[in-house]
Length: 251
Length: 77
Image 1 (spheres, rainbow over the protein chains, first blue to last red):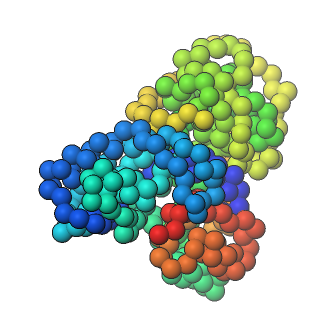
Image 2 (cartoon, rainbow over the protein chains, first blue to last red; image 1 turned 45 degrees about the vertical axis):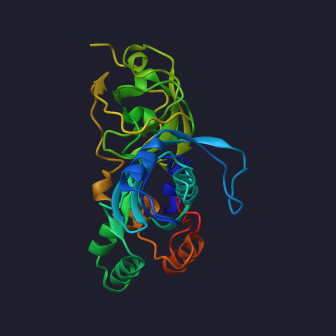
């Protein structure tokens, strides 16, 4: 995350993840038993963060949305896991081993998606980044940098979206709440308390906010606060302040 | 914060309006300088160094970037 894009970090950290992991069993089990036990974990599970962790070590619930056995090779099992943020895959492998009775540990882990960012799109190596930077600085060649750096909007694609009028933008940049009349378009199924991404008509991310109304209310409400900004990305002054703009007559 | 992944949503239209081309810019038209201000890098981190080290390296390389942060680690293997 670069410069102002860093503001959306708290949202990204809470997003669902997809992993591929190698679980190594400490004993032999039948394939049928293995698949059955693994599927048992496709549910909310209890976890306590390990000793080496940054968070408080209280038992908490984490949801495993999907877990599959992709491949089996002797005692090595290739697992696919789609889960809530903060799920410890290492502990998951350990617990699967316990239920199987033979024990297991996580041998290898690769995160393949974090929220909107997956390895399918725009994944680059450190070499790519360094090369792109040098092409740009030394030759003025922008192409590589434009491939290596994704716009921050990419990182919030999965969030429900609200598009606002130009006249509402600068106030949001200053942290003012978004009133319903400032909204042009919005996604359905927004509930009170959901994080929403506020966009301009040009597709620029203005801020991430917390919904104060449901989608259906936002469509019809003549007044009232629809969203409270929580993480403002766009610099104030990008759009001119139009706080005293006269209401147009309803057509 | 509540978060339900993978919702299929529709777009609801409340009103129409035009945008003034004199300010703002579609993300696809951002210059490199602007991308450095409002960008993310989807980095395939090598196994050895920690995320913290990688951020430190990037800060040394990207001398014009004031802030770099990483979005979560795998918690150490």
